[in-house]
Amino acid sequence: MASNSSWSEDNFSCPICLDVFNSPVTTPCGHNFCRTCITRFWDGQVQYKCPVCNKLFQTRPDLQVNTFISEMVDQFRRSVRVTEQPCVEPGEVPCDVCTGTQLKAVKSCLVCFTSYCQTHLEPHQRVAGLKRHRLVEPMDRLEDRMCKKHDRLLELFCQTEQVCVCQFCTETDHKSHPVVPLKEEYEVKTAQLEKIETEVQQMIQERQRKIQEIADTVDRSKADADREIADGVQVFTALMRYIEKWQDEFNQTVKERLKSTEKEAEDLFKKLEQEIGDLTNRISEVKQLSQIEDHLHFLQTFRSLKSPPPTRDWTTVEVRPPSYVGTLRRSLDQLEETLNMEMKNLRAAELKRVQQYEVHVTLDPDTAPPQLILSEDGKQVHHGGLRKKLPDNPKRFTQNRYVLTRQSFSSGRFYFEVQVKDKTQWCLGVARESINRKDQIILTPENGSWTILFNKDGLVFNYNPAVHLKLRAKLQKVGVFVDYDEGLVSFYDVEARVHIYSATGCTFSEPLYPFLCPDFRDAGKNSAPLIISPVNQTD
Image (spheres, rainbow, N blue to C red):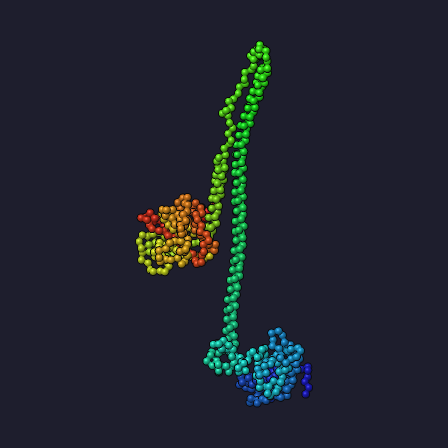
């Protein structure tokens, strides 16, 4: 019987599921349904009636597949499959049998290890031997999906050995291992991937932030360098102007002294030349008189000889060369005074610059030995005179009068100020975290501290040997600046705005803590506390 090519899917659709008939059956009233659809429909009814015309049946009809309609449906399906089979798209499984244009596979056979389009799948739906083959949804690389040992589909996952296994594997090599369906493990691993992706995204963002941070640092460094160069140009230009000024004044002073000497000599030259002229005229008169041989005439003429012109006693007259002793020194003294003023301004500017890195720190009572007393706010410390009973603590200094802050620093720059007013001896600076806290130690960089010490012998930087420092006036407040990355520790007289000392080329490999030592009470003379003070920006 020839099929009508004008028929559409509507001619072969079940009124219940609206899909193409599957095992079509016909009710006594003549309407057609899928066997499964009408059976399920009647299973939920007390009375059996037709879903289309509502004809009521006294008993539940015994329905048989309508072979005529079934054949018509098969022909329709084949015609539709042949004409509408899609070509394979990227990411889809292609038919392994197609030559030329490959069509999309609709099933894969786990026995043949081949994927088929609807056309090439037809033998598996018709031939009895092929009908027994196991068909699954289309899969690529079928050989990789099969267990090499049992020739079965890898459908399970062994959580012990983290490998894919087949059903037979769970009964042999993986018998005692926990196994789950691939989908279940896939969901677990997918969740892990999402977590990994989130973590990686966070790592990327952290690195992007670090890139931005470094870029910002470079920009700030460039701005700082430009500002520093500009300040340097301004200062050195001013210094050169001062030098040129004092050089000009020095040259002018020397030239004026030389000019004065030259004028004095010129005046003497004129007077001497005048006397020489007068004396030359007298010699001429004398020679003329000496030539007269007539005695009478000679004597009469001699009486008319003029008196000698007045002359100066030149034996004591001299021109003293100008003395330039002290002239250059006085000019340099004036220049030094100017330079000192500029240096004072530079020191004030330097102190103001480092004060921008102020950190707020408080003393850690867990590091203080029993004889030290700390204020409640952790900003002051003094020697109490008596040893308190304190619990043992690995952080505590037991043999020294030292205390550290709660805060530590492992990079960058930081600055803090400590008031030392009214104290006769003290020590302060920074110390590394691993400084010995249980034994007597010498405060040196080798032992983990960078500090200055003041006592009756003066001010020193604790080194080996100690570096003695000049002290212009009694210190009231000391500023401590640290550039961790540059290995720099600097100390400042805050009130005088003077740089005291800098330790350069230091090597820091662990956290640094601000370090204070108020020292002994000295019979009450040194009872004043060391005070961590807020920074008052200098103008």
